[in-house]
Image (tube, rainbow, N blue to C red; front, top):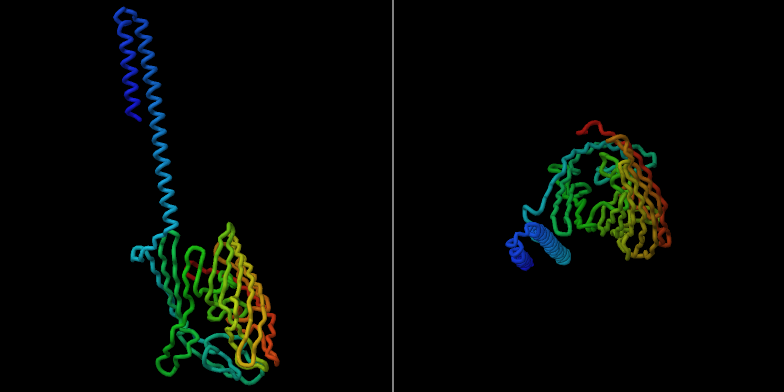
Amino acid sequence: MKFTNQVAITAVLSANLIAASPAYAAGEEATHEARIRELEETVLELKALLEQQACASDATCSRVEQVEVVEQVEDAVAHPQYHPSTYEETTIRVGGFVKLDAIVSDYSKAPTRGIGEDFFIPASIRTSGDPSDPNLNLHAKEPRFWLRSITPTVRGDISTYFEFDFMASLQGNERTVNAYSPRLRHAFISAGRWTVGQPWSSFGDTASVPDYLDDLGPVGVANARQPQIRYTLPTENGSWLFALENPETTLTPFGDGPRIDADDSAFPDVIVRRDWTGNWGRISVAGLLRELKIDMAGFDDSAFGSAIALAGKFMIGDEDDIRWQINYGDGLGRYMGMNSFNVGTLDANGEINLTTQYGVLAAYRHVWNDNL
């Protein structure tokens, strides 16, 4: 394209010069100057034309390059390359803490060993009025170890998280070495908006849970951990959470007795939660629908239970905050207070009677300084 225009310029210049030669020879100076001006104007016009064509050519090349980039991006999205992880690509973080618990309990005809000694379980409190004796227990079962990995891909980061402690272990003893087995707390993988594995249940908003020393926490808190499939949909002012979680039915037998754990449900627990967040804090509303079912010797019955949870955290100044939860429904059971109370009872006919429950908590958190 440029070569053709250069030839055109040369041809025009040559033609005009040849035409101007007789006029110059005849001494027509005015005509000569007019022809020169015409030549200069023609050259300027041709230069402008060349510049326009060059810009058009550059724009075409730019558009071609943009199309190629778009095609490369579309191909990368359609065929993502998940390269084997290397030290440079994957970030691995480890952490945890060491803690010694010193617990003084006042029992009344209650067991002095096991989880009843390691946790404060309100359901284990005896109200018979029998004499009680204090009991001291020291243990180091609560120290935790966690590991997190983050691997970048063309579709975003893929992260994993594992966490262990030694609580609720009955394999050790206090006679000599106090050895206890690890207990799985969390194990999940997150990719994009999906989370699969065992994190905290989507029903409870962990941001509204206060700090506490006892591992069980307040009796009114929603704090179950269990396997689930969760989808998180971000919004401008928060997010939606949709989860299918592991079903499990815990019942009190007719006439009292040890808890009945039944995993006979055919449907997962369904949870939907909406979070609103801002500089002021956060509020969440969650709904729970679950099938409660028992199918074992002499018992075969099912029922559907539901529950709702309201929770929030309001900022007080730059650091302090107020945290609260309100949980209510006939399907709470093990979702509240680490299953301090069962979801229902069995009557004399082996039928499930759901128990309507509610839990409320409120806490004020004060930050004394940057390290405390």
